[in-house]
Image 1 (cartoon, rainbow, N blue to C red):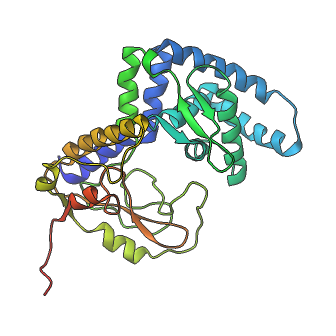
Image 2 (image 1 turned 90 degrees about the vertical axis):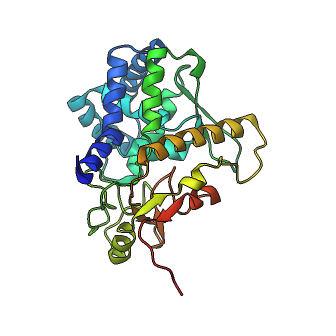
Length: 304
């Protein structure tokens, strides 16, 4: 298998579309009783909510949502909500969950998508099942908390581990495709946008020359650094922080083994101000000191 075929296989494995298919199967074949019961209750809640009469702008948003439901069924929306909640271990901010879910809603207006996503998450969090939304305070964002870790059926735990292991696209094992617009950052089959952020997309021209130059750089993992344990960059004060750090280390080691000793490429993205950032969570040039030290050039020159 050449590098391009390897990359296409990796992208197929790590695509959110594939995760949704895995989740749909988990619900369809009742791999977890709590999940299936919660999903059925959510279908009823969403159906009742969509039949209500509200104010004009909300009625319009629901009408647009109804077209997708009529075409693909309520389970399409419930699977997207489930993926939005489960794609990050432990907790996430409500903004993260909304950002994930809104990408699967049909509204052309970004505000309408985000508002509808927030309402759907709030609606389904009322059921004592998969997750709750906890308000932290007036200046802190609300968090989405998954509830029944200890009660998950063993069959679904494997599915859940798969979803979390494939939540972030790994580096590319082939040279990225040329970036010529704001809707791609170099992946061959995944439409990962060049512009960072869920509600920041625009069509204004970016510095594609710099992005393509950075994308072409080949990297290697430094085996000497990887032989050393990864330590926290700051003190961990709570049990939750310890759990999150240990999970991050475990997930990172999974990706390190996936990359092995072969060279790879990092895809780069731009924020709304044109600043460039290497794409990735477990392997990232702009992360903590340990992760920076893990990276070495595959091809380099000694500067004098």
